[in-house]
Image 1 (cartoon, rainbow over the protein chains, first blue to last red):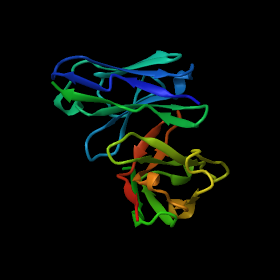
Image 2 (cartoon, helix red, strand yellow):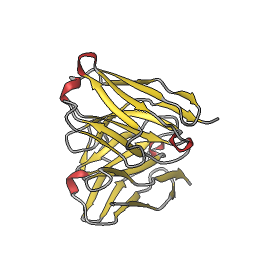
Image 3 (cartoon, chains in turn orange, blue):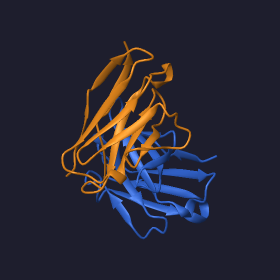
Image 4 (cartoon, chains in turn orange, brown):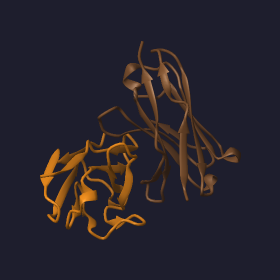
Length: 109
Length: 118
């Protein structure tokens, strides 16, 4: 079973600061199948990054994804007010076929 | 514009059944695999089930295998989740999602809430 562990649980930052979120897999995973989502209160998740580093349609370039093997990261270069939300990583492959990390909340400091 | 609209949620007693539906529009439905993802109140995301475009491949999370059945009707642009033997731990917001080309979920509905309680 592949387990995705996100850290930190909560990230307290100010607008304009850089945010780096971590997603660690319990075993090496395929880069192509690693994605990141943003979820705001009362809304459905939105796809940000797929294939570990490709931005989804309409996603601003301040969002970037990186990593390989077991360690992946989502970076927000300069936080905008609308970026304060919960972020999830997700992987396809292994058992279960699809798995999510537990989420990182980015809150206003 | 891609739209996914879930319906059928509600309050149900443990052990009973419920059928969720998802209506899709704005894309060629039978070109895509479709999935269900759920989120218990205040918690994270859990993948539930997925179905290929042709219904030839259907997969389930271990937590629902044998109790839930996913199906689709391409002629009606609709996805379904038949949930039997419901348990309190099945309480969640159930999202209908479209699977993109790299096994990510590129469009999500707004969800339908299922509450299992006596």
